[in-house]
Image (tube, rainbow, N blue to C red):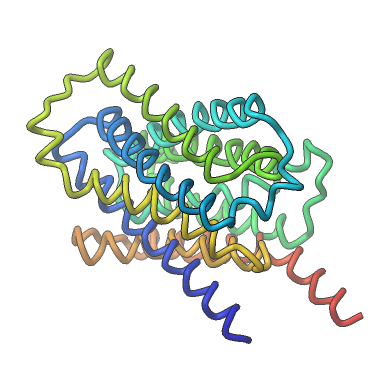
Length: 304
């Protein structure tokens, strides 16, 4: 493994670390503000953080490398940003509300189910899924049962909301995949964060009672979620994925689910039962299996 791959892998792991700890920030923020308020403020902060990143990338010429490929105009950029922003608005608010009823660790693993759901949704777009993905789906279902099902064989309210969040994130990822080859990814992310922030702000004023003193009291978790999770981590992801195998990158990023469990245990003193830990293990195996087909095929092609 050369130095470049090691460096990029470390940056991807740092991104996963930021996202994993962000679950703790989201949980801590709920002690002061309500879900729509938290997401409105952090999304707008994240969008503002990305503006200097866009200016820097354009100035250094990093954004110009992809110019021949990304030939779409402003209309497609706005369309992609708005659609992704609406989906992000749905996903993050289902996630934020769901976290009121479950632990940080469970929230991290349930959200990471998008890695399993995306290949399944791809079938409807005529993208074949390998046998390892289907084995991974079985592991994920077993893990979900152990992690979420209670004695009455019913999903808890928080788990149901987080599953809806994972499904919405999966759709958002597929929409992002469609638009990023046509438009600038960082600019589209900035637009989607603004859209998410504005929609969350509308719901905040309609359904909640935001108070500035409470928002200021939650400054640390909001700033972390806005600056680090939305702004810094997204930029790191863009930089770190350059020249990396997408499957390997996705696998490293999926470590956010494990980090969320460790962060909840260390920072919030949350503990999972043996049954829930086994469920997390099975879901992590499922996440790994979901990444195998493409990487295996690439290795075979390199050998031949």
